[in-house]
Image 1 (cartoon, helix red, strand yellow):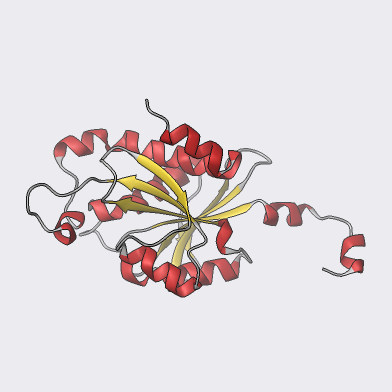
Image 2 (spheres, rainbow, N blue to C red):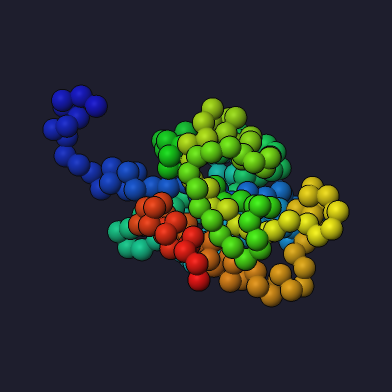
Length: 209
């Protein structure tokens, strides 16, 4: 930014841009995957968009996008669901960040997490991908893991069931009964991160009940 830029009157659009977050819900496309545990990130994106009164639309990038404000004058959320499969999430996310002129630090990825019990939400910034193909591809495309993750617990598979098979199965009947509360909690977590900051959000969601 040069000296003349500093003198330029601040526009309303500038303030909006500085308070914009990209929220990406990970999943696989198609009706056959819609109820899978692996698609819980997309389910949270749907819940969050509904809460904001925003509808998903096709976009210039390979994703469907819904935009809205957490509250009047508050943070703007660009909620996105990549069009491709989980392991190709990086390209769409990179394109979305460029389109909205956002740094990876303004990215929140919502995804399923095997290492967290079902009905639990945890938050972190940075770190590895933990074997999650969506996170792996995003970090590779951005050449950075410097983004926030909302980790939605789905628990470990029972017995000797393969984890890859487990995540591509629909939630059980018991889990489906609890799922609305889990999706609501995850949507709350996203809003808490953008409104109050990661540390405050972690204190809220990581504290024992």
